[in-house]
Length: 166
Image 1 (cartoon, rainbow, N blue to C red):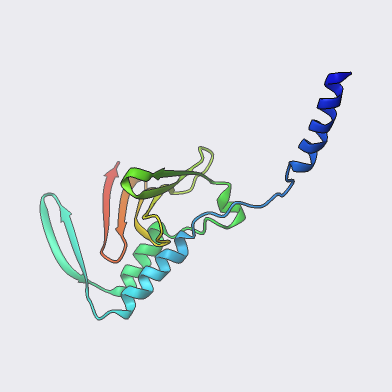
Image 2 (cartoon, rainbow, N blue to C red):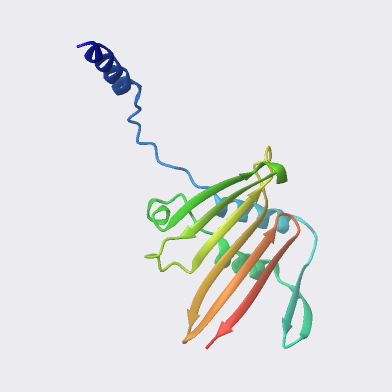
């Protein structure tokens, strides 16, 4: 009887203290960040320089900004906050306190056939803009598997490493 006096109030408190909100989780707006970076680039009077290395030979050329925009949007822009897209990715957040870095990683679930397999956002605490974004993408074109590793450093550069497998 004595234990019932303690259990019943505990159960009542537990029931009322539980929140039944079904709030939907918000993912980082990567697509908005990419558009922001591209809009900033378009507003600046700088040329986009393209370095292409193949078989140990490097070619340098000026890259058209509109072509660069298409390339960038095609590689890593992803609307993670859309309901159907959220189901395709798992989120993991790491706060590396000693390194002053917050890392948010989205990894494609196994059942997803999405070409963008992984995207990692590195953010300095206190600043909402990413320092960099790293992505892994796998595409298949005409039987050739193309694996791309992409590193975008905010306001500085976009590196794309592509490997082709027959």
